[in-house]
Image (tube, chains in turn brown, yellow):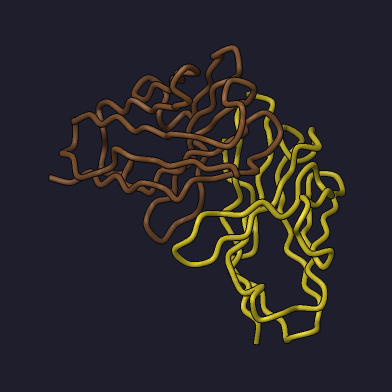
Length: 116
Length: 110
C-alpha cells in the first residue's frame, strides 16, 4: 500500500537550516506530483510547496527564497531544504502525494521547532 | 494568497445533516474545480474526503458530499455519526499555480 514516511525534523535556532526527507513506497514515485504541507501547533493547514513529475516547482510566498523542494526518483525520496528558518516556521511538516489536483495520501508528519 | 473562509465551528446531533462552507474568490474556488476536502482527527494526518468539488475517493462513506456555487464550495455530511467529529479543511488550486487552504472547521457531534 501507499506509504510516506517523513524524517529530519527537530529543534533549530532562528536563522538555521534543516533538511526534511520523505521516503515513499507502494506507488511509482516518478509518476506523481509531490508536495509539502505544514501545520503550526493548534493551527490550520498551509500548503508549502510542490514539485511536478518534470521537477517544476512552486512555493508559498511565506517560504519563497528560503525553502527548496527536490526529488530523487531513483531513491523514491522527496526533500525540503529549509534555510533562514524563522520562529513562525515551527510546524508539523507533512509530505503528501499530489499537488496537481488533490492530495490523496499523506505521511504522519515530522515536527520542526524553531526556537532560541 | 489569503486563506479560504470557513466557519470556525459547526455542530449537529447524531443522524442530522450539517454543511460546512468554504468561500474564496474567482482566483481560486470560483476559477477551478480543483476543490477538495480533508478530515483530520486529533494527532492524525489529514484524510481526503472529497476531490474535484464533488467526487468521493473509494472507501469514503456516501454520507459525505460536496458541491460548489460561484466562489463558495460546501461539504455536507448526512446521518452524522460520532466518528465524524473532527476538523475539516477545504483547499483549492489558484491562478498563481499554488494551493490555498481554508482555516478549518471543528465539527462537534452533540
